[in-house]
Length: 124
Image: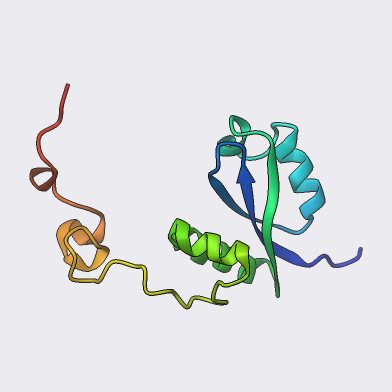
């Protein structure tokens, strides 16, 4: 059985949003997205097109890169699409500083977000 290479990809959805995924067969995966059998996220945002892809060494590397791309801001993802993005984990200066309230390093709830008292009461 021939060994397939892995890819990380960004899809541009009809509503202007971006979807990130990893696959060993981009043509098959794109066809699944277009047919509504891909990710739940893209089903209501058809049609989609491949905006960016990057080869990965193996499945593990592809999944790690996918996770890294998902952590990027929209601006950084658009820079990848335009070919100006950094490869492998480097980030542009557009991120919030760690001292900003609400950033993961702020210490609230173990880095999982703000306390309810910081965001106000729930509205019913």
